[in-house]
Structure formats: C-alpha cells, structure tokens
Image (cartoon, rainbow, N blue to C red; front, side):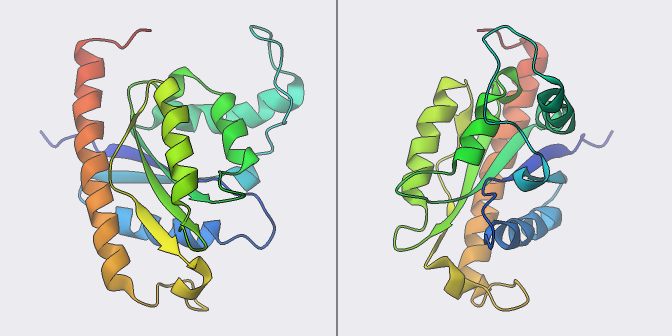
Length: 197
C-alpha cells in the first residue's frame, strides 16, 4: 500500500506591500512539489485577515476572527510539517507571523518546522533564531538546516526564478529531506501515542 503523502504547509509570513515573500515561497513550493511524496499547501497570511487583538483567554473569538480562523486553522491542523518563509524586520520576524502563531496552539504540537528566510546581510537568520524559541514553547520540533537568502532581492530575476539556482536548490533539498524525515517520524509517533501536554 502506498504511503500517505506528507502534508507540508508553506507559510508566507510577511504581509508588507512590495514583499518578496510570495516569490520566495513560490520557488520553495516548486522545489517541494518535485520532492517525493509531499502534498504542498501555500498559506499566504496576507490573504487571511486575522485581527491583531486576541480574545480573552478561553473566550470565543469575535465573528471577524472566527471567519479568518475558519480559513486558516484547518489548514494548520491538517499539516504534518511547516516551512516558514520569513523576512527579517529589525532583527526579528514580522508581527503578522507572530499573530498567526499566537492564534493557534495544538495545531503546532509535535510537528516539524523548517525555515526559509531572506533579508539583508544576515539573510533573515536572526529572525529564524527567535522563531526557534517561539516554536519550542509550542511543542514543535525545528529542523537544523535552513534556506537563507542574503541580499535577497539580488537572488531572483524578473520572472521570480533564482539567478543561481544550484546552491539554493541544494539547500532546499536538504531542508525538505529533514522535514520529511521528521514529519513521517512524528506522525507515526502521534498515531501510536497521542501527544499530550
């Protein structure tokens, strides 16, 4: 019997006008589509208007939030693994990404998270290191290797393709291999022993 595909959610974390995120995400999703046994879902937070004000702990969300959550929460719950596409803003990650993370909890538990970052000289890696702390608190497993674009705007042509694909394609394969291994292992673990906190 064929193995069930690994469901990978590629999350575009920036909602800023003129952002590079969708170009980076489209490229990475293309690499993921070529990877064996992956079902890829690109989640663009700019298309899901989550309010910035969270309800009181334990309270039901307001109607506007409930509609946005209805578009996002099932996709996160269904995912076996996540690839976070993030820029670096002021040595950190976008508020839109933190907001989407904070609206959720169990959807992240016992699942692997990988990072595709972009920015200036640091390539977004300072944002990634902070995100590792956030996801540890949410009982997620972050994988070691990343894909990082330093001086990101110089790496893509006018059609959105990498100018020098060899190195970034290789980094993407390593990340996808790690995500797939962890996703399969943790999915089997959750099925055998439901994860509880």
